Image (cartoon, rainbow, N blue to C red; front, side):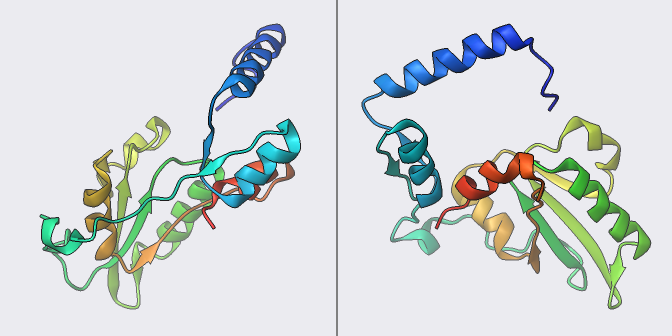
Length: 168
């Protein structure tokens, strides 16, 4: 994402329009206490924290009971969602390359639940990409993984994202 994609005058108009829309909304749903606090402090607005919940009969309605990988001796690493830190992901891939995609005698299998950014399309032969799937299906893709991977930048410019993105 390039910050200079749109001109500064248009960006200012856009920010004003979003602020007006935000202030007139009857309710605001947010992902975490951190985001609710940010909205309260920054805009004087109250928010409702949205929480994802499983149906009580979750086990009965899941359809994908089998593991997604055919190699039982593989180490499955899964990423789920949007990539906010492509540079950190590049460094992660370099680390996997340095390990020759093996760890402790196990082949590393990387699964991407969501859309892989186009800049990484050349890696589609090495990464299982599911695309966007319904919530319960995403849980099935996550449940047989050995490790979850969620890269975030620790730069000051991404601080607000870090403070407001994670459900608490």
